[in-house]
Length: 341
Length: 243
Ligand SMILES: Nc1ncnc2c1ncn2[C@@H]1O[C@H](COP(=O)(O)OP(=O)(O)O)[C@@H](O)[C@H]1O
Ligand SMILES: [Mg+2]
Picture 1 (cartoon, rainbow over the protein chains, first blue to last red):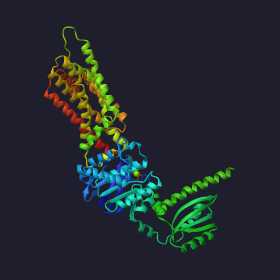
Picture 2: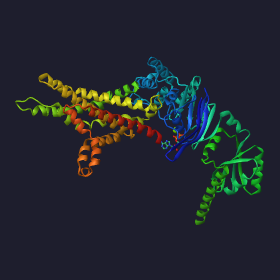
Picture 3: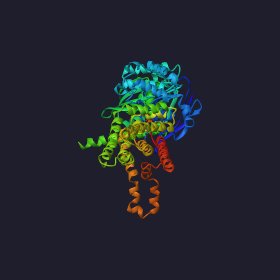
């Protein structure tokens, strides 16, 4: 088990990661999901012992990576964001070197390297200089390095970035097949990626954990909720105000402009009954409803919602108010320009 | 650790770079040697290898940063530092392996220069004792320069900057006596004395004149260890302050 406890990391004065706590259970593939700059790589660099943390601990099977690094590091295979390959070495030579520094017994190195080359399908380029390999192959060589010595834990930082779709599928299958013997943390900024291979996911944004749950639970938690798409004519701030005051409206996710004074609102509602209330209220306030449709929310939206909030735990309401202020400001500008003409 | 040593060594032998440096090195060595022969007077067939050593290192120490510039800067630039730092090796072992590899290359380079005394020995006499002494001094001096070069390489991501910093350090090292003797420090005898303590040139001169003093040997070894220690600290500090 890997335990990450209250992990905090500052780069100078900027916190890249703030008070992160989660555990990785044996033989699971844990998804580590967050937009770019969320702090995924930073966290992984700390977990693997590359960077020290500003505060908090990382325990690998109970061994603190900062206290007994050499012992803890032996249990981890790490594929960083940029594959750590020496371009002036040949593939096999590089892997033998890696086996050496990882402290794999001399007698076992050859077999380990062959095994890793087989699994990653790089045997056909074993005598090529890494410099001359494509991005996909380099990534695989870096991956092969990570599984040398059969470490119990594999930490993979965005292993499919920059690969073509076929390679992505291959890598996914490989990760699934590795699950049998390894415990894996897989980071990505793409939800579909995580959904495809992980059972459990930690969602991180702006250096803070936003959710830790199984994919299934996250999907279920959406329950009967619905997304309502409504095209409405009327001043945006008034319309949002009107909608927001209705019982059963969870959130106004988005409002995109269709035309002057016409917006399509994306409204999350508790259940289908709320739709009628909204329509009644809008009509009462003399707003014109041009179109109505509903859709099931998906995980993508949950992800966007969870990660779009800035840090400092602002409530959703504050966010929406901010949003309205901006909108009003731009509305006024528009009005002004019209008068000029 | 041996794997890392081997890889480093290999990287020198597989780059044309080390060969260019070795060739330059031999060439630099040849010039005073030829001069020495040319200047022989008709009656006395005698010239001093010690002098050659002494003259040489002025040129030679500028070659050392070219050997050491890539040691850490390159790892950082190519992202392979992560590989070393997340392996069970600790920073001490990493620095030691790299230092030993550069030292080995350096040792081979000076071994090549034996070529000149050997030719001389074929036709005449060579003062073996002073030769050994000169070589020892040369080697120890080289180790100090290597450890300084590695420290410079640990400061940056760019081998070129590492080389420039290294050359700068070498210049300071060479001219430390001149600095000491400059007007400013003549008026500050205490400061001059402190700077004088770091002066390596006089100590090297001892070696080149065939005097092998224990104090001088200890000085060079201490200096080497000290700069390697700084290198370890510098790497650790980089780890703490950024990525
Ligand atoms: N070496 C560094 N020095 C300063 N800031 C950094 C460094 N590395 C990352 N950061 C900052 O830390 C934050 C998290 O980065 P990172 O962990 O790379 O995110 P992710 O991998 O999720 O995209 C970002 O805001 C980034 O700008
Ligand atoms: Mg990243």
